[in-house]
Image 1: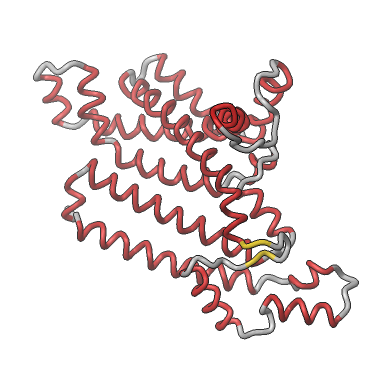
Image 2: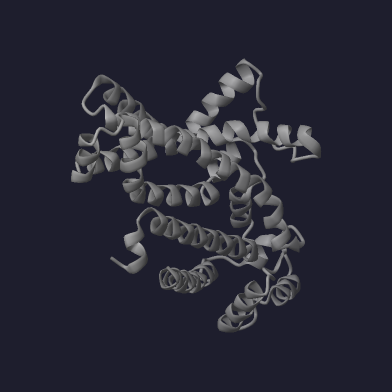
Length: 318
């Protein structure tokens, strides 16, 4: 197990290093002058030169990359020139929105998709299976931003049960937590249902493949209850593709919520990246993207650990 984890960790660190090269140099070669974008087209040459010097744009590219990499290794992600504050503080403020939103959406998606996938696999070819997979197909096809606007129209405008947008913060005590939870509920549902549709289809396919194995027929022949065969024997052996999709979905929910955060006007990481790109605040874009890459690598490492727990053969490379 230790060798397995060490190998996965080494792969993750190598991926993080390659990602830092790609992120830094791709953003640096983009057309346009960040100093001119920030000061405007009518800025004087002296002001542009001073800002480029302050931003370090007059230094060699390799030295800037090494300084940036060293700073990230020590927890210094630089300072935003648009917001006039350290990047790490901006990220900490936005993570308080994006991380709970991603966790809520993933929890809802998992709670819906896995039972639906098992239900459909256990009734393969029946009307209930067709209806469940038809609903999943509709969920895959519907754009999440359209579904988000539909939820706003029904639950915020129609019934006035939930807020239509904005985030009041987590506040103090249970009242503050409840207000923050209510503000994130509609965005979480709009993100969760399309992901649940994908996960349900994967769960059904994995379960169908496992249900045809000899050990499942043996378990049934021994007289084990249908529920025990499905949940204790078949599901565990079908978890590898399900865990893979869960890891990919969490990465998407954490980093790819730009549209939903703009629909609901949420101050999350996705909206921060969108604003930083439009303002050409490269230090913010580089820092946030690298933090997201690191979080995705960490999630993949946790998924690999779950692989080893679900299937002990992976610990020894078999």
